[in-house]
Image (cartoon, rainbow over all chains, first blue to last red; front, side, top):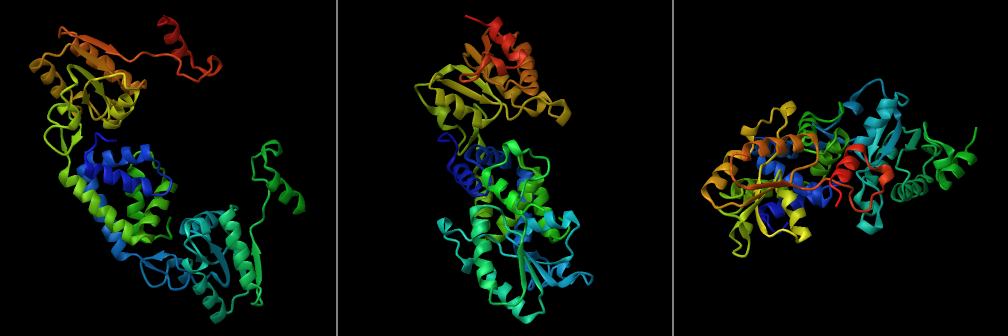
Length: 196
Length: 196
């Protein structure tokens, strides 16, 4: 990349720091922006608008355009149930199933000591406050089945032991469409243990 | 994505239009920016700087920070040889081989009638002018082995027939490390035809 001008190399560096983008893709994106000036100008304008307008829902902490998000305002939702997710985009996945009609709580990440993300960086305080101040009956931990998601689940479960509510987490098992031959041991063990 | 504020949905839409980014990744990136305001502000600043500073090398058309790029200014390069590439990032790949010491010419794309990219959208005029005004002996077409790359190669070869210079293109064959069993028919045919 030494043949690229300094300003572009810096832009490549920024793209490289975005999640899920590698160095080659970053170069491609930076050059795309510089080659499409009109698009890039609109894009920059839109990032600024989004940054100015975005705020967090005072209840579920999701990004919202007002002090309370649309989902929290829906009157037909079960306000006594909270589904805890790591990221806002997880809400969409759960909504797509059509199997849940409660409210959500977005942690904005998972506990990750390697990256320095401790419980204080997440919206756990807000969750506890919400549980204390409202009549919550159920908390569903819908966190990733990864090491960081698992760590967050264990942490939350421990903390919530003190509160008299039902705390569950998503079942582990074989995903639909996959064969036993290619299922890893841990998943298969969970699927066996939780057979019904 | 209906639960996201309008400004974020618009930003997701912009990310989705960037090359190699799907709708899910676009949502993730837009939310990342809004969750990392400091990073996003710096990022926007840097895009603006890059847009302002970037210009195209008057000779090879690569993005440069001056009227002529570093590569074109290198005195030990063979100025009589031009390697034609579709994108600036292809230069790096070729430079890495250490097998080429001539100059480059960046087309900024490939002919693609489906997307409305005709020869006029590329820097072909500048290439022809360059060949006319300089003592060029060799043009190497280093374009992708895809349908659009191939179409561009054929088009350029036809046009360059009128000029008394050597026009070659990169060899087609089995890439190092791959097995014959998994090589497609067209590649294998080329490898057979060009055996040496």
